[in-house]
Length: 95
Image (cartoon, rainbow, N blue to C red; front, side, top):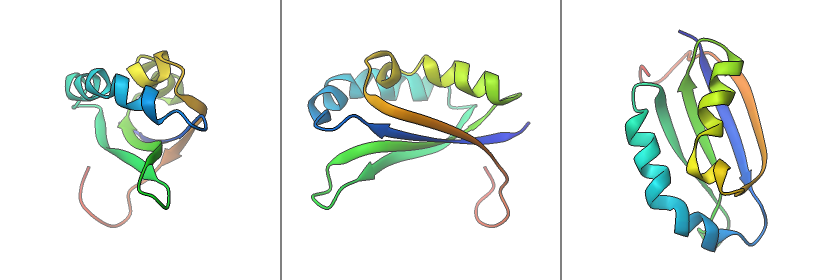
């Protein structure tokens, strides 16, 4: 099944919203662990989270978008933008 990278950038000054929805976000990721292959936050110079990177496995881009729309971070309106790109692993760990 194809892989997709999601580049999610937080709205400025939304760390509190991220932290308030983090537990639900992590539960969502755990529930979809078969599809969410890798993920983690982008950090600013002060090591505060400012976005997320996720690599997901989905049938197509529309399916990846539908999955990511269910993420509690997305539902809470945390992101200023979400960009989804098809991705192919060439080197590194198997996903």
